[in-house]
Image 1 (cartoon, helix red, strand yellow):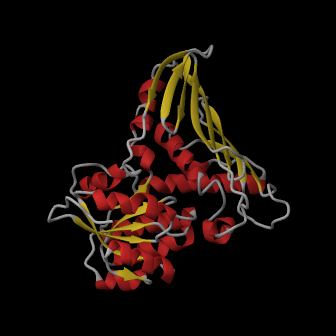
Image 2 (image 1 turned 180 degrees about the horizontal axis):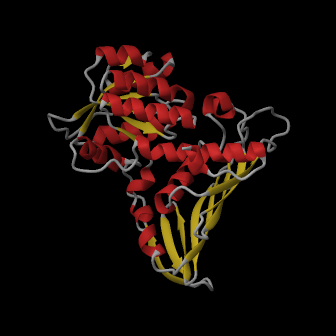
Length: 338
């Protein structure tokens, strides 16, 4: 894989963590980006590192501290297990390197608040990688939502089947910060906060019973109910065990409904008839190809940071409220956690 078409002043970019997301999204995007150039990679696995070093022909490091000391970097893309993220962000801030961080921003609300302050004091920009923010299907949701009268119900579902939810670091709450709520559920939580703001009340039920033959603490399935004081309410079903893979968000109003999936959005009458529909067909370009270019514009001041640390403190308030509500069996008001 070789970079093509880079400008002379392209952002010198490193990738920390060479797992699935980096290999399938970020590295292909960097290879094609006119605004960023891959300058180094880092992973703690020697075999993975050797393979990528050979293919990418860039310096490789097993220690990101060493990489930050040795390389003159503008940007680092962080794709590490959740519990490692804080240390990478802190080190990047110390070296004044901007950060594109795979979700979640942090593993706890306290950590999110701390990291937001560190980024602010160091003067770096950090953007959490949430590709739906730049997808026309998702940006069109508010427009269609304005056409369905007064909304009263939100329905969200994000499920997939993982044979063994206890397997790997995602099965360990101490490393992942939780299970499906903070991991895959973070995408739907982001959409809820983007479109409607932080809810006023949250209740939640969590399951660790999908595989009774395994012992794990990171929830495999969650049912989250939330509401706003103006009467809007909703629910999310999240699961790492329920197949087939689905990702849906619906909004029901007094004069119709909007239902959105990963590549299409439709507006219905309340009776279920389709009024209008939009479909985005895959182009073959790497997922998230627009992220790097958008972030470059954030860095030059021509675009706002739509996924900043301050924004994501609220995300962690939502996540924390889910876990607190499930633990106490009581309703939690997430705004009071801030």
